[in-house]
Length: 424
Image 1 (tube, helix red, strand yellow):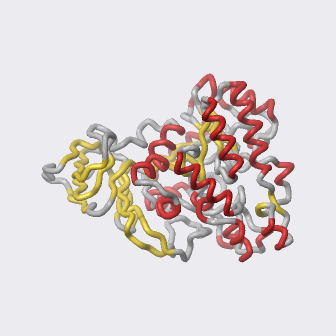
Image 2 (cartoon, one colour):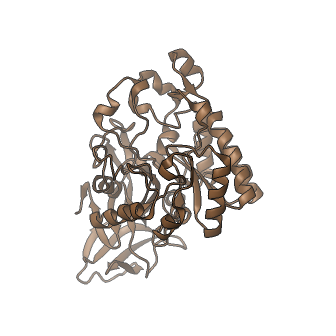
Image 3 (cartoon, one colour):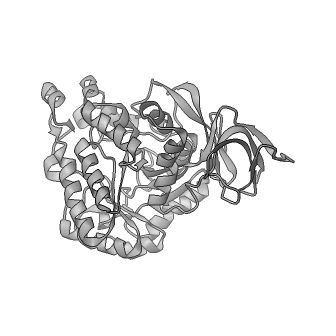
């Protein structure tokens, strides 16, 4: 394993941001200071960059097993490393769905084999994600699963969800909900509102999200479960979460970068790249999401990285699958649209998602002795989004010039990304 001296950057320690060098030896941080001896270590120039904890994405779709033509764990890991991520939580809506222990172990083992990012499997709440009966929760927990979700589907049966919440409450794990009432959302392709009416397109009302969150908060209050709202998209949901937190409930939430950037009026282009669920909402919701992330009501950024092959998206809007990729553009997108200093940005994109997901080796401010999971990000560098490490290119940021990019990424002290290239 190589030794490195990260020199000239602004280092985010637990106490403060300091101009210092960071020495990495045998996978761990061994020194932070202004006169660190490089010795035989490779000097890595971090001038002008922030040296912070490796980013953590608690909501990605890596498509393996079963849909490797969209993405696989190798290509998704490369995309994550390019984005400054050192850990990702892989959603269980694969084929087969990750509803048993051996399937969860397959995902984590494949992540270790690739070795670019720690890949942590989420587990299904219901068997086969069919909403009918609980998955093998004991097996999943034994395989290291900390996040349980039927992402892509809502657990509509309140009694079944209550039983799942009671299970995870006893074990300290978290229920993460894709909040979208199936009856209200049925047949919809975009936000239900003025733009959908002008286009004559069936819409999904904001209430499809909020009624589920309101119900689930009642169940979380009943069971004492940790409850996490995935990909928040509406102002009312933000207010529900804010009120629950004020009450003292153990509730957390995430927002995706594309919901911080784009509003529903862009769907006028009829470009299927703007089709995602939850759909893009009106500008007032976008503003509420930015404010919620800034003030901490929304705890974390999660990309909901959802790759699709070109031929799948190259169809009329109504026929296209939902979802966009986001790992490689996330930190620039958030930094450009939200009023967050570097420490708060890394808190939302590393420290807090790691805590929610139970990832004890990630999301730590830089300190000696810690495992060297590090992202070096230059927020001043402009770059055109025109190529991807992901197999898929269904990015709403394609063709846009962003500012801010990971210069280097380190996983357990090994460089996985260096100035635009994956380090295999």
